[in-house]
Length: 372
Image (cartoon, rainbow, N blue to C red):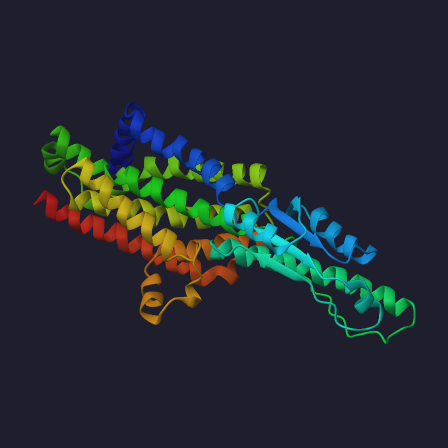
C-alpha cells in the first residue's frame, strides 16, 4: 500500500502542475452542467399561437384564456380566415393555430359534441408531439370544467371521472429526468479522458522506462495512479450534484451515504476504463480521441439517458448491459428522486462493482505486458 500511495502522491503533483488535466476534472464538468442543463429540455414554453374565433362567445373566450394562461402558448395573431393561418404558418410566424367554429357554445349547452380545430406545424416532429399534448390537455381541462357546470345545472348525469396522481415528478418536469443523465454523462467523460492520458504522458515524457524498472507491482501502480483522480473526480461529481440541486431543483430524497457509494463505484469503473485506454495507445491525442469515442457515444445512446432502452432492438439492448452508465443512471434516479434503500438498487450496484473490478484488472494485465 505504501508503494501505491507513493505513486498516487507523485501523480497528484503531476495533476496540479498540468493545468489541462485539472481543468478537465474540476471546471469542465461544472461548465457542461450549466450549459446542457439549461439548454437541454423537453419542456416547451411560449409557443406562438394564432386564434380564429368564429363563435365569439363566453365559452370560446374561456377556451382561449386557458391557452394563454397555461404559459405554454403566446397569442401572436388573431385571424379571420384560413388563408391568414396558412400565410403565418408558411412564414414560421406561428407554430399553432386554434380554430373555434361558429356554434360551439350552442352545441355545448345543448349536450352535443363541440369540436375545435388545432393546427400544428409538424416540421419538427418532437416539438409537434409535445405541443399537441399541451393543447389536448388544455382542451380536456376546459371541457371537464364546462361539463361540471352543466352537471351543476342538472342537465345531465355525472360522468365517470379519473383522478391521476404522478409520483416522484408531479409537474412532469423534464429537467428532473435529464439532469441525472447529464451528471452520469459528464462524470464519465471527464474521468475517462483525464486518466486515459496518465500512462501515455509517462511514455511521451520518457519516464516510462523508470516505471518499468521500479520495484512496484502492477496492481499497486494502477491503484496509485487511480487514487488522485478518484479523489478529485469524487469531489467534482459531488459538486455537480450539489449544483444541480441548487440550479435545477434536483431533489435528494435518499441517503447521501448510498449516493456517495454509488458515485464511487461508477467513478472506479470510469477511471479504470481510462487507464485501460492509456495502456493501449502511445500518444495523448489518440488517447483523447479513443476515450471520447468509448465514453461519449455509449453514455448518450445506450444508457437510457435520452433514448429508452426498452424500445431498442434486442441486439442493441444486449449491448447496453456492457455500458456502466446504464446501471448508474437507474441507481442515481432511484436514490435522488425516489429515496430508495440499497437493496432496491443492489443489482445495479453489483453490476457497477463487477465492471470496476474487470476494467481495473484488465488495466493491470495490460500494464504487465507493457513492462515486459
